[in-house]
Image 1 (tube, rainbow, N blue to C red):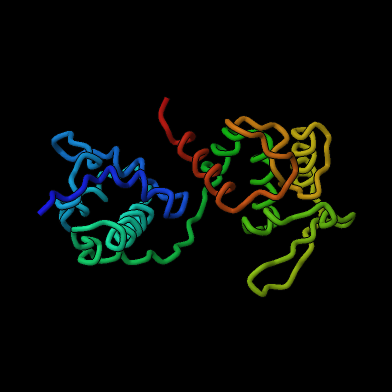
Image 2 (cartoon, one colour):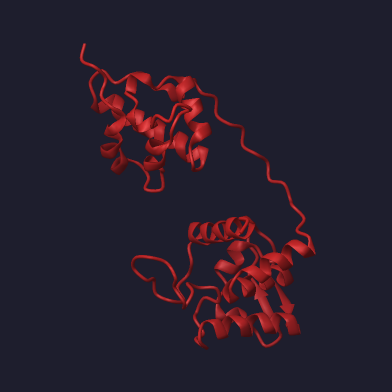
Amino acid sequence: MEKAKSIQLTDEIKCRIARDIKIAKLKAAQDKKGRRYGDYGLEEFQPSTVTRLLIHIDCSRSHARKALAAAWKWGRTAIDDMPPNPMKEIETEPRRSRVDVYVTDEEYEAMYAFVDSYWKAMMEFAYICRARRSELQNMTRDQLLESGVQLKRGKGSWGEITTWTPRLQQALKTLDEYNSGMEFDYVFGTQNTYKGKGVRPMAGVRVGKSTLDTQWQNLKKKQRKPE
């Protein structure tokens, strides 16, 4: 019987699964002996092997599980002598229930001092208006009324208006100054000052959920990282 093919086949599998799956990180992860999981033969991937891989992987475990499951599902229909899917014998991690976390004044102030003006304004709007991420993400200029900030509540809640306070007005002024005075349709649209790599997105367009969440998580990691 021909020896099972190398896990390097994941280069081909990569284009067949969701683009956010961390195939490269799966292959680059190393076991206790320093051997890359990308150098393992497919026949070596037993449930115990996958369990250790999920411990060492430098990305979301749920993404890693989805990547491996998708890879084996495709491989079983496209590759001769493909070993059985080891993911079927691994129990799914229970989904954690959402727990409300109280943010202290000290924690808020530390993060506020760390981020730039765009995020300072967003933090203030979220705090003062008790706004969810999606409500800030979808907030448009026509919601900034003379009497205050109109929130279009999601999840079946009634909309409401938070009256202007000096602190809230300062937050909006800070945001407008950051955007060089440009007033975009979306209050918290794509930043006018783009610091990323690659193609620069058009300023002021609606920011996607994953983009906003990723940027915020990266900021929190940098803020917690010791000097």
